[in-house]
Length: 129
Length: 129
Image 1 (cartoon, rainbow over the protein chains, first blue to last red):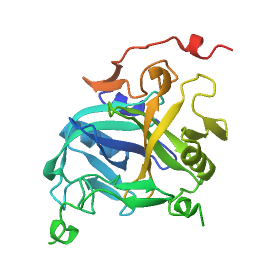
Image 2 (cartoon, chains in turn red, cyan; image 1 turned 180 degrees about the vertical axis):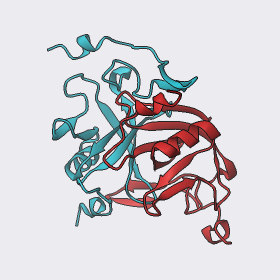
Image 3 (cartoon, each protein chain N blue to C red; image 1 turned 90 degrees about the vertical axis):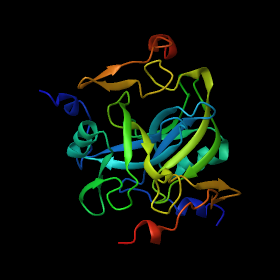
Image 4 (cartoon, rainbow over the protein chains, first blue to last red; image 1 turned 60 degrees about the vertical axis):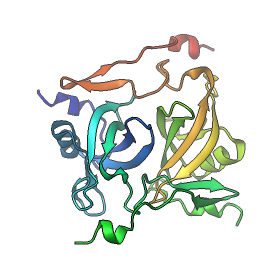
């Protein structure tokens, strides 16, 4: 019963729900990823964002490689219980694997998407072993 | 070729992409819905948010019943080209069909989701014919 809030979520056919990470304070939308039940449970219990990597098919503790963890301040769902919205503090100020502050750096201008936000750090440095 | 920016989007198996509507100015995340190619094209060309209703299986011109249109100020996609983020002005100040400002009014507190934002208008009044 202690996790019955997890039962209120409408998981899709793959058992996933999209999760939006929004930066507390600035309100910037940092990224969208997916959570399965375990990821959402861990996000709530640990206070750090945990996603489900669809490509790697495993839990993805945000920042596990980059150090760019997300500290969760608030967790919400929408009227349909099929989207998660978390307010986070972005450690390192970089949410995107491209080394940018957030993933939404491509803006539609004159009929094409243009990268309009700066790369803050070289991914080769972020992800070097 | 004029619509080749639409080809850069990674549509899912259903030919859809999730779209986040964020309120210009406040930065509030208003709602998440889905767009197919036609909806995204119309959103960009008309300057008003058009979604694809998965339940009704047809284009959904946001506000067509409620009058609560969304005027689009900016359109972005993310690093994976699989999520759309639009900055909008929310006509009427109500994005949610429940009569609330936005759809993310349920906050996780003490192990359950609680509705923490006020209903601004009765849906029966919003949607009466």
